[in-house]
Length: 363
View (cartoon, one colour):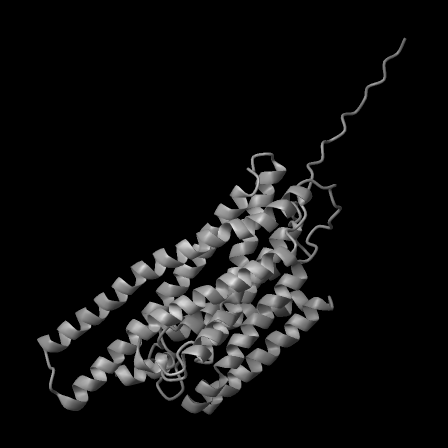
């Protein structure tokens, strides 16, 4: 009697379905606008005068621009909760509630700290301006005003972090009530066949479009400083949009073009911030680093790495990205793009002082 060897069938782990947008978006919208209301209220108590002239408009605009950040926080929290439920160690609705509260508290704290730093910068600029105009508070008097202003913003951050955390903990059971039931149903599913690198061109195109939006936002400012610089940013934004279109349509040479439009501006930015450009209105003078610059650089570094990973000549054997990971990456790109666009267009500064305008007033 002969015995035939039986090949062992590889075990396929069940893949978790992405958390539905109908669960993510409502909680993200509520928490984003509640957090924005709280930050706007604190700004009226301790912020600079320019930022309190239109509180409703500021609340609506800032909360909308920061909405992708809270969408990302809720999406990450519920995806982690779904993974815990899939492995059998999620406890009903408690785990989603705790993770959503923690993630949105971190996002709200980041918003509050960034807003306080921006308000402090404007206040210090105005103290310098007032001292140079009147001359009634020189030397140690001005130093005491600096210290008092810094201490005021530091004291505002503590209650600003504690109270929103309480609000979000109270909304945690509401999130868990809906999210927990959805996660329990969607915890286990059949494995889906996903092609390697599927969805990555869309992520790359979104990063290119985000960088283009940030560069387009700073065009008017650079046109005022030097028309040639404004024209350069117009061409750069157009090139990034064109590269995104080529990537999505999967045209030939799309990936090398994406590498070029990502690496070129990044190297040029490093040169201008470290050594200064050899031409222009202020040759060989290093430029100041702004938040819009950092957002654009983050997007360019991301698109550069992703474009290199998508190079056809490479043979990689990495696991295909999960749909949830792709969605989180897309939302993260959207969040960075929205924040960079807001600072580039001076939307967060209430159109009073921009990144370069503050440097000019301080000088």
